[in-house]
Image (cartoon, rainbow, N blue to C red; front, side, top):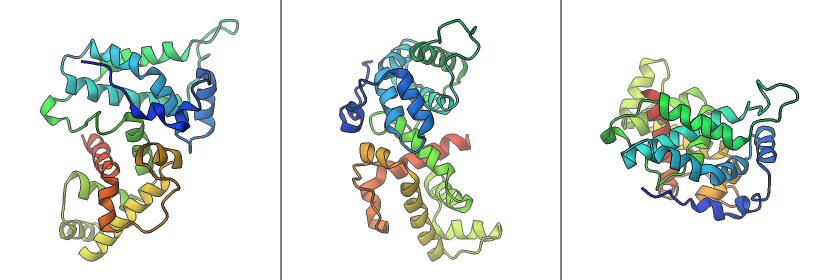
Length: 237
């Protein structure tokens, strides 16, 4: 099992930050949550170490890739409040980001229960963990009904008619045609709240697309929609 190479490391937005220190990247990540390039740079810098640790602990390549992505999701969620001096004496030097990442990876290896190989839908080759992290964060910014419609369409693969019937039972009166339009608008909003630099790095959108997303446009952004489904699937477990 070889350490994967991630094409985003050669993106101009990322290569421009290679000379930044870990501490600088951490501070910028915490101060600018609307910009993804700082986390992506940390990911590119330390993904070989994290993947090597996981690779030597998990036999199945499919499970290893899944755990790799889950580990980076945990890292992403913890980095926002990370203080490398926490718990240390005042005169002690702060721990390094590398050591913290190694400890986080070890914790995930030891504590997380991996699903069977046949139930894992995630593909590391298709979707890099930082994109998954930011799509998941963007899903949290949607209106509840938009979030629910995407969940039913992408995770449960329900038809517009079935979604309409479910929503009406919950007091949301949308016809199947209105559900179809609402789903398009939900995807449009999902793209809108995704950080612009993440769209540029992973989806090739430069500048931000502002035109309305029609049904035919989904072919251009299948990775985003598939990843939204994967993120929702993990939450529904």
